[in-house]
Structure formats: structure tokens, C-alpha cells
Image (cartoon, rainbow, N blue to C red; front, side, top):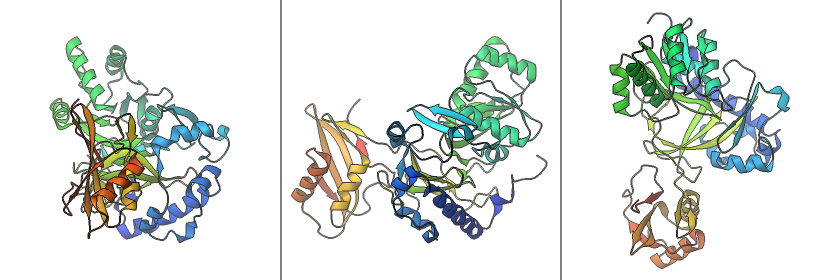
Length: 410
């Protein structure tokens, strides 16, 4: 592949320079946020100038994506979290939840061009974009990225496979953008109908799991496919590069990994919930917990980009379960831990015995701490359910991000 190896010089910054730049942008975002009623109420008293290191983020409250529908319903349309009049946005959209989302006036507000460039997409190519353009941001996200790169875009949207094949016949696109499972559906339909889809040589995929067997199947078809990790609220969070070692975090965001149900960072190498701050002072987003699990990879990518990497999507952090008619949530387990002196880590295991749900709290604790009866009483006060307690040695519980483990048979 000829031409520049990187989208811009931001990708190869010295990590110390990146950190300084990010902190300056974060302070600007916080300053804007404090002028917006919803953020001011959520964040409480914050002095942006005092945020002089990333660990200070842990002192700010987390905003959970799962809370957005209720917040927005109480204060339509954006929960008081967006600046400016409605008419100032480019698009006003809605994702399942419902979650209402505005799109700003930039060509590529979701920052997809960087991820698409890393996937080998270049000016003058034709992109068949099968992400949805209907109400949700997905189609527009990759449309904007492709246009910023100088590509022509076929706004195909999902489904209607026969028409998709007609588009491939007519325009011979080299790039597919969409979910990995629909790429397989499209190629299989071409085989069954004797249609030629061989123009597709490269793909950028998101929005669904891309397991190794499907990756191999797509590669066997001669398509070089790259994953990116994105949400409607945050845009691109991380993306795959030619190194094929995890996903490099986008330059426009700060990613934290926290223990599910809390805002506290995990230990190095530990799986945690993805929390994203988008560094856009015109549309601040501070510590949004998106509900997914991931882990940081150590070191730098062999591709030459110097930002941190994550392993990609590793499951859902929202481990809410219903037990004997009551919901139990990771936030409750975190609150329980905070009441127990010496408690380091816990895992709430849900089992079933004699057709009745059973709860066992497995607890790592330093020192003697409260006795089992006191812990069980504290658990009942918070969970509203009887819980057996099992103290385990430090380091016994897996560092896999699981707080509530449901072992009940399906």
C-alpha cells in the first residue's frame, strides 16, 4: 500500500505529549459541561483546572448508558446534557432504548475516518455502506468517515440483499462497511445466485461479534476485514490495525476500565467495564460507562501507533440478574463492599437448589474483618435477599470483570 502509513501525526505522538494534550482537552470539556444544567447537576462541584492527571477522573461520577433513557424522558430530549438549540445540530436521531442523539455539523463527527484509514481505505475507493441510515447514527458514522477520506459512498443500509447485489454489479465497490454477519449473508447470497461479488476486497466491520471462525471464512474469500469498536454516543472508541494485536484507542477519547458497578479503575491486565470520555468541548461526554467489558494490552502496537490498546469487546458489564423476584445489580455489590472493612473483592454467585434460587457471596478480605453473620446481615440490608457468605484467600477470584455470576441452569 502506497502513501502515508498513518492518518495524521497524532497517532504517533510521544505518550507524554498525548497525555498533556488529553488533559488540556478534558479540562476544556469539563468547563463546557459545567455550563450545561444536566452535567452540572450530575458532576456536582468540579474545578476543571484541578484535573491535572488522569487518575483524577476517578473522582468524577460515572454516567451509565443504561440510565440515559430515564434521564432523557425526565428532561426531553437529551436529559439536559447537550448544549445549544436543537436547530443547531446536523441530525437528530434515536437509538434503541430509546436514546436520543444529536449529530454535530462536522463531516466526520464520529471520527470514523481514522479507523477506516487504519483498515486500508483510501481516497477514490467506493464504499458499500450497509450500516443503517434509518434514525440511528451507524450509517452516518461511516458515511462521514468515508467522505472525509475522499471515498464515494453507496448508502445501501442493511438488508434487501438482492438490491445490494445489483449495486455491486453496477458500481463494483472495493470496500464493505457493515456488520460481519451481514457480510457473510451477502457473500453467500452471491454464491447461491451466481452473482459476482469479487470486487469486495476490504471490509470495516462493527456492531456485532466477529469470532475467529468467521474471520477465517471472510479471509478465505479474499477480503481483508478490520474491526472497530464504536457506540452511538461515543463514536469510534478503538480500531484494529494491520498489526492485528488488539485495538488501538482512538485519539479523540479517553478510555478507562473500571470495576463493574463502580467508577474505580481496575488493576493492570484486569478485565473491567469500558468508560469513555469524548474530548469534544462542543459536545462534552464525561465518563460514560457503555456497559461493555474489555482489558488493556501492555506495551505499544507493532504498527507504530503509540496510543493504548484494548483487547476489544469481551462481554457485557451489565450483569443484572433477577433472583426470587428481585433484581440484583453490580452497583449493589460495590455498595456492599464499601460497607465491609477490609473487603477487597467480591463475586456474587447465583445457583439453584431444590428449585429455589441461592445466593453465595464469595469475598476476598484483608485481616479479620466482620464475621460471616455480620457480612450476611449487611448483604441482606443492601440486596434485600438472604445470602450465604464464603471468605476466600486473596487472589482467588478471577480478574475477569464478572461481579455477578449466574450459574442457574437455563
